[in-house]
Picture 1 (cartoon, helix red, strand yellow):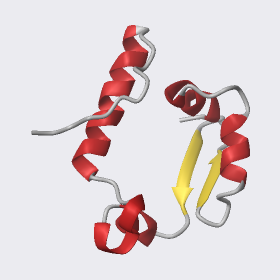
Picture 2 (tube, helix red, strand yellow; picture 1 turned 180 degrees about the vertical axis):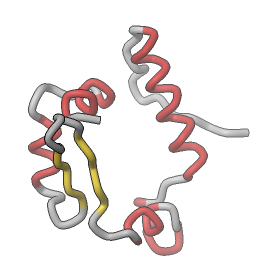
Picture 3 (cartoon, one colour; picture 1 turned 90 degrees about the vertical axis):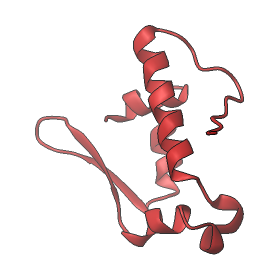
Picture 4 (cartoon, one colour; picture 1 turned 30 degrees about the vertical axis):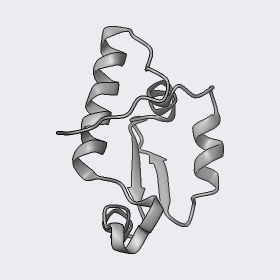
Length: 93
């Protein structure tokens, strides 16, 4: 996923992903190969585990199922040409 795809997904302005990721250089690396295919790499394998462990990450914690569902819904909105709902939250029963 290239930066412009991420910007569309998150409804950001052009160039914002580069700016936002510049502050996260010690955690995530975004690079492209010779064919222009981008890859975001977490530089610390335990970072994902940290975010999904509420005991460790406290208020930064994310529910894995809710996060995945929210991403799927957002992608379906993009593919259908609809904008995201503001303050949209996914609540699993």
